[in-house]
Image (cartoon, rainbow, N blue to C red; front, side, top):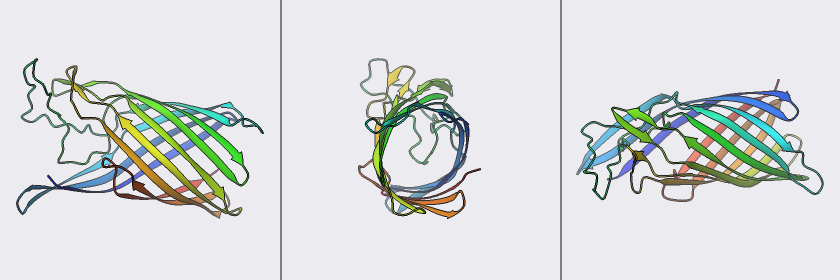
Length: 245
């Protein structure tokens, strides 16, 4: 089965600095995704998914201020809210006998969902060190996703592990370039407590970015990312706009 995915995704984030060491944020993603699937010789089906993704609220706490010899450390904790649609299709779905080797995967393969539609807890520990004019950073985290009953089936996503590493280089007072490796590993899905074998996936992206100050406290950040494995998109373009008040 051959598939082609195209998507336009965006998000709106608001961040508020409560103290020098504490920042609160809320993010609402939204988008439009199209998936075309070859369902037979010369036959294709195209389905479109649009709307909100899963939103998130978060607190970023600086645990350690960087020094000459030690990196800074920031802990992020947050809640994932199911404001997006779940990606499952239970039309005609039935579990095999309890002793069956495989449990069917209820994920809708004909649609490219950008949400999970489940409550969750997000965490990340980030390290950073400035070696002027370079900033080095690396971090990782865990997302725990709660199960939910969908069409009388109890569905639960596996634990999600995230990681990143990279650097940014200040070329001038207005321009900074950056490179990073970003990855997400999603564990196996389960239905009614039974694991769906080979439902895990891992996305690994190499990202090149430019941060350009275009006005006082206004920054534009275009970037391009390339997938480094089969589960990742081939190429992804992003443009970010950030304003400080």
